[in-house]
Figure (tube, rainbow, N blue to C red):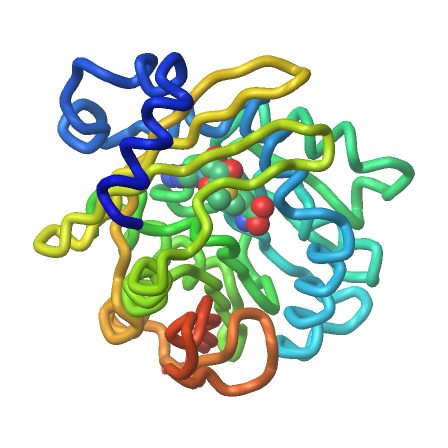
Length: 284
Ligand SMILES: C[S@@+](CC[C@H](N)C(=O)[O-])C[C@H]1O[C@@H](n2cnc3c(N)ncnc32)[C@H](O)[C@@H]1O
């Protein structure tokens, strides 16, 4: 997005932009921004951005990519408001969803419906620390859930996933990555979206190519109110992500076009789009 366009947005939405002015970047101010970012506003806005049809398609892709079967234990870490945990449980997996956000876990429980406890369970947990339960067939980390803090935090999170799966079990991550982000920016990708309830959501990202981080603020206004929230995310390259997986003792198996079983290809205006990385805990 070009500078004049940004200033046009600033003029139009000055009262929203004003909310975030006058301080250091999110990164300098708070490397643990994610502890308050994922609240009830996030659940409401991001539910609209991930409608049921999209989540069903994602669950279908994960199901076939990981060759899941009814009854197999799956760790959804982090699970957010449980959109994928629920879909995978409905397909027959026994899902444990872990997340640090109490607001999102409350929303996940609310959406649980009639699914029994032995099929779908949610627990509050900081993924930088190991889980007591192990023996999962698969552990998933979906929708750009890495890069929030420091690199050692991501290594700790991936180590948690590695030790949670049995030998021969698989770890799958799905994320935005640096090449795709840069490709999107180069073609001036859309930063404003109108949600189904009429809310206008605008994102203003600032990319630091040296740190490899994007500091981004979302502003929204609509019938249910207005506000803003800021985040700072490390955008790893696929090469760096594979190194992180390997560093935690996982064996990298394959790179995919997001959740699809199709191989990843760095082609097209989206730079190949989101990437899905499949790794295995190999017996030693
Ligand atoms: C972008 S959301 C994705 C959630 C879910 N995977 C999905 O697809 O909707 C990222 C989630 O990571 C959680 N999170 C971030 N850091 C965490 C940590 N250290 N431990 C547990 N959860 C964490 C947040 O609370 C949030 O729910």
